[in-house]
Image (tube, rainbow, N blue to C red; front, side, top):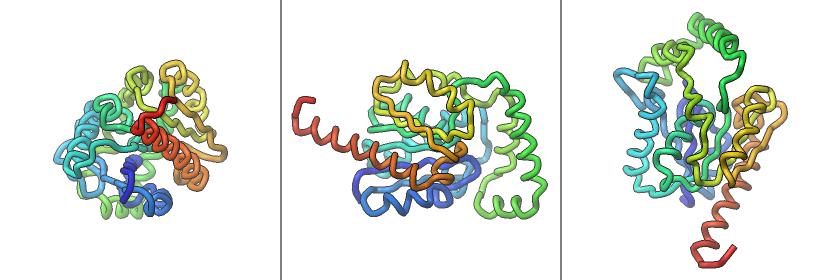
Length: 241
């Protein structure tokens, strides 16, 4: 019950297995919504087209909110979920009260090829790990291996979208873990595009800030959402700011 707060999980996770701490933290006072992105968990799909995956997932999200009869929502996304959240805010701005992003890359790093090579190495180790394969087989009904392999394409990441936030008109909170230097470096461009943006660099955290530093992350997010909620009440009552 309460103000709708939507969390979009990271790649190869599900709504119920990611943002666990945040679900408990916000569950008493907010209507917490944790969908599975397409091809993840119980959201099955026959074929994933990686070039349109983020766009398709944003459209899925619109259908989900329509089904739940929710007009506006605070959207929170991490990594893959943040890409979907960003596209959703761009395509359907009237449905988004605020946008919180973490684990995305604002601009293409100079060493992108090397970073992709590191990811590929990690992914191959996952596919060779029988325990990991069995785990992902249990939590996903779709072909998660196919999705993982398609993200190995060097041009799959939507830098054209992450590099341009000029069409975002809602308040934005960008949370970045300090361990990823290219993410920290890239956020300098965002304040030039968006008037109402807040940036939090969290120490001792990877791109998965919400799980590395759950208390810190949740505290920052809660303050941001509370400010947005107060602003809505003030505007509704007709007070001038």
